[in-house]
Image (tube, rainbow, N blue to C red; front, side, top):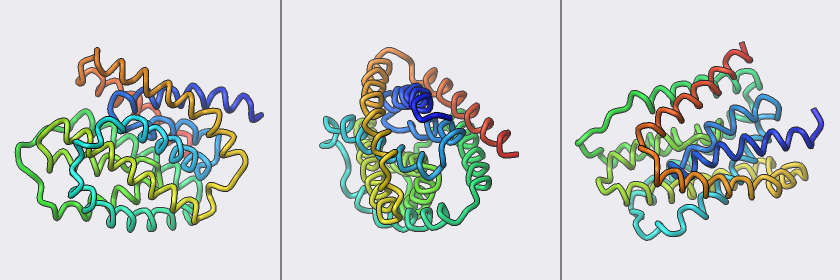
Length: 244
């Protein structure tokens, strides 16, 4: 497949993914990574998604950073770093077929979680920061989708919706920033094709974030959650079918 048509297709996928990012404050990677992995190497896709996520999260979270809870962030970061190191080790050693199959299964389970999850009035203990950070780091390195464990932990700890959204957004920046550092150390960021793709696709991602923010102001959250879950399930199932 020639490079130019791939970028055109990638631009459409990135736009859809970052519209979702603009709506939720996270969640672009579960859409973009499984689809792009159909026709681009998984390690390349993960590195590309990490750079796009970091740049987009910085733009989206700039105005809400003062509402974030720094104590929860500081507690999650060391465990996230540990999980990232473990995840990158697995990434470079796992066969491509196994990694893609695991990614498909994870995305399908994440979609089901979105549909079936229920709120809880009980506050989580800070002890859960350790498994949330490690699992989020491993999933972020392997699949570029480390958000769900962080979201589950922070929404269980924080009661104010504004603080939840702001802290989750800042955690996305920290976790993706650590992931970019780990990928750089592993040598996954130093290719000309990667930075060409970033230069062409980052404006598309930012436009998607803006559109998603506008949609978020007009559409009921429950409806958006169902649409996102359906898109996730279809992309995850397609990877499973392709791999098997």
